[in-house]
Amino acid sequence: MRIWLLLFMLMPAAASAQGQRPPTVVEVATVSDDAAVEAVQLTGSLRANEQVAITPELPGRIREVHVAEGQAVAAGALLFTLDRALLGAERDEREAAHQLAQRNFRRAEEMLGKKLIAQSDYDQAKSNLDISLAALQSIQVRLSKLEIRAPFAGIVGLREVSVGEYVEAGRRLTRLAQLDPIKLDALVPERNLAALQPGLPVRVQIDALGGESFSGELVAIDPIVDPVSRTVAVRAQIPNPERRLKPGMFARVAIELSRRAQALWIPEQALIPELKGTIVYRVVDGKAERTEVSTGMRRPGLVEIRSGLNPGDVVITAGQMKIGPGSEVRAAETENPS
Image (tube, rainbow, N blue to C red; front, side, top):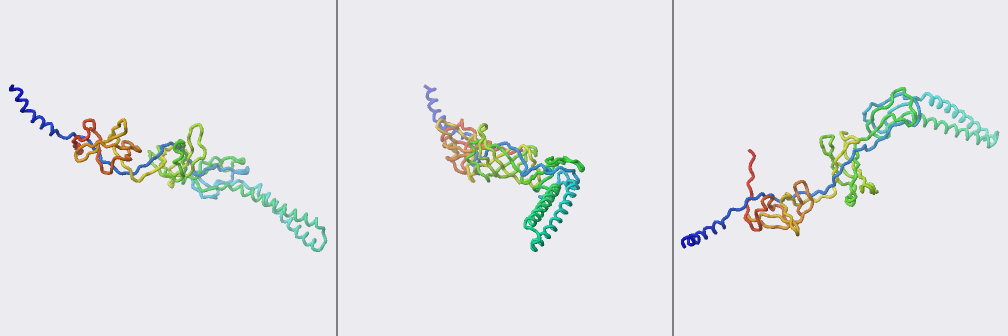
């Protein structure tokens, strides 16, 4: 009897102690407001904006080299000169023939006016003049081909010939490359094709330069999808004023497909998957409130919240298994580094 009486007296005290149980300590994070960027991650290769092998159109002997290897040159700059002795002599011969044809034509013109020659003789003199002029112009064009000039502004590559060397037509003497801007070629999966358009921002990371990043934009999209790889070739252009980027470099590429100026982000560990969707626990007036959310894009460690939360809301990121809706909670104190 005394035992039951003692238990009866202790029950209110135990109930009172249970009602005053301290709040559960949890870790929390504040909903942040930041841009949401959808990007496709690729690999690609750099290539010169313009690149050409410098070759002679006529055979001949290298008489002079006018540029150094690695030199920057303007469009039209003289690069090589071939020996012009043979063509020069031929030009002198054709100039003399043309001058003779001019004199013969003038005489024929005078004599035709005095009716001293037939029309056919005049026509023959006129034809000879035209033929001599064409021959002279032809040799002048060939002589101009002995001066090999840069077709565009760029950087001269390694020289492959020496002064005095005889070269055939089409022999590569050096290469010329335009490096600013520089191009990037990559392959994009066809599932992203609808979002591609010229002008999209492109970010390029170069392993050979310590992972340094460079910005550019998409300039062209191939109209044909590869039926084997199911990819489409794209080309971007990147400013390269210091010429640090070189053709052939491997690049890690991010093409920005879309951007929203404002989006809500929370740590991904705050999410609790359920059969009918996803929830988080918000902290409202010191209590845990179950909140359904819809998610969007993801970043490393973060997830975008499309609905259910507002900027500045506080969500529980650790300790959710110890609480339920309405549980009193207290944020864990962040220790200051010593």
